[in-house]
Amino acid sequence: MTTGMVLDRSFQLYLENFALMVALSAILHVPLLIISLVFNVGAIEPTQVNSATVVAVLIGSLLALLAVFIISPLVAGATSMAISDVYLGKTATAGEALAAGWHKAWTLLKNQLVVGLISAGLFLAVAFVLGVATGILTFAGLPPALGVALFAIGFLAAFAGFVPILLPYVLIPPIVMIEKSKDGGTIRKRCWELIRGYRGKVFLVFFVIILIQVLIEGGVAVVGRIGFGRGEGSVVVSIVSQVISLLLTPMSAIAVTLLYYDFRIRKEGFDLEVLSQSIGGPPTEA
Image (tube, rainbow, N blue to C red; front, side, top):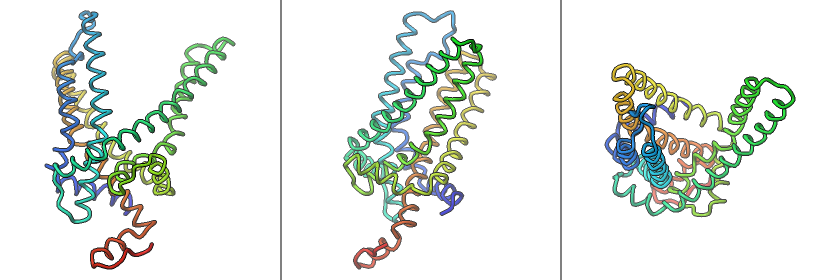
């Protein structure tokens, strides 16, 4: 499938299985919405900031982080399993998908943690090096404003450089769920094998999906601020943003699963294997 075909098929599968996708996505975003409403500080004016509001911000942020960290892998795995079943012509239900995701939740969580630590380590190392270099240059007479600009440019350049390194790991959920892999090293190696030669394709798919979400959420934020003001607008924007995320999050999981099968078809003749098994013969070699 071309990039356009992956996106088109992703939207098609999303619409055809809308209730299933929203049900799975809601497991993550409903708790986040509740946390956002209970601990919302967007409506607090600067003059109202005190120790209580600071504690509320910290507690809300911690709960949201835990919800994302713990529930997100489960939802990603369940969605990958559901889309895989649909792709292979099977019947998919939210209960079965969640049961499969729960069975692999620990494996998904461990790999997410490892990838998160890799990402954090890379960015912290870059930030440290850039910080030291900027400090030395500022001490040597470089204007502080220029030093900050160089730091920002360097960090953005590093981010662009890290994208090809981290991009393969988007395939972790389908590999864990579909191939039943458990060993972290094997899973990450498998990601690199499947995505080799197709990083640009994966990047474009995610770029389009993220761009759509950013544009929609940005438009809602602007309208909310203008129409309701800072206090009420922040609450409205918070609610609508979570609803938009709930609706759009499944798109990335669907696209990842389709890309996974696309790469297997291209590199391993997966379609031939499925055809062979469906007629009762032995798996066909790629």
